[in-house]
Length: 499
Image (cartoon, rainbow, N blue to C red; front, top):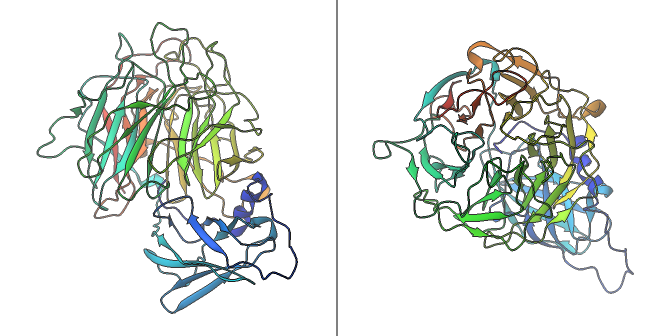
């Protein structure tokens, strides 16, 4: 996720309800002397990165049962943070990066201090934030996909510098059958794709998906969000419908491929030995602090599920054993959107109804749920006090700088009337409102694509002149009503041209 505005300490404390910090060690006797604490990693990442004002997860050993302190040192500035007792255990602590006195972008040295001494120092990369107003957006189009497609998925893969990144697109339904297509292209800072040499999307003919798929989930892991080697990039294709004729179908297979961070080429796809506990399509997935999270979806009978799964990402990009959370979604749903920010996982909208035809139109609901998500453990889900204006399903979601934007999809009302709406993260999480009230966007502030089952992502690059975030919307099927199979498929790629 892109860097965002700050979440306060009150929000950070929500993290500890998950049970991650429940296994505190005993105080022990005064002899032998307590051990010197050791930090293993921050945020389960090889190159940990965070904005100021957000909580970080510090993993290690010898922290003792009672809280010590976390020291942040940048140049001559040294700041001590004392986490709450509930945010501390012998093997981990959750601390909020100080929002004042530290310079971002930049680096800060992090240590843990207890009665046993001071730990080793780990460097945390601080990223800058900007003020971003979604109501100032305007949209354009960039290089179209090689063919119209719906039920496709896409992710952005960072390159080797702050000015390089790539888009990877997989699968989808082309109007006749589900496909095993893999497309790739370079991303530009202004949100466009392609270059003087990449005048069309590159079809990865040597490494297509091993099977046809649509309505799957995709996620991306790199050294900033996982414990993989520096410069390594991995993409995951999770579940999905294999054959269009299946009613509705679904698979539990997870495919993994590496992406060259210098050229954007996609390597050989391998099927993980750790399959999903259940065959699903219309599911949502994301990577956060070294763990892959999956939520919701349709089972093989066409019924939505409440299930939440998590699995650690290993150093070689493979995934570990899946854990089924005991804290499921409050209501079963599919075709919703999901993201994790500051140790909080959000599930937005989705279709609570059974469906045998994933390409069909059907309205969702307005509900938003959130829970803590720390080291793969999900806390209790809470309904957000502010629901969305539209009962949206099969839509898209973007996040940037504390803003959350949901849009497109199928919803009640006239097609094109509620294309996008936005909310901000609530810094204090007051009155069960982790997200503040939603505001609808109209006119030039939305792309006017009027599609559902499209692919979408937030670019990891900033626009060079305005430093604004760039959002891309790819393909989809025309939203024409609240029932039926919808209209024409789209090959258009939209992106916001401002601010």
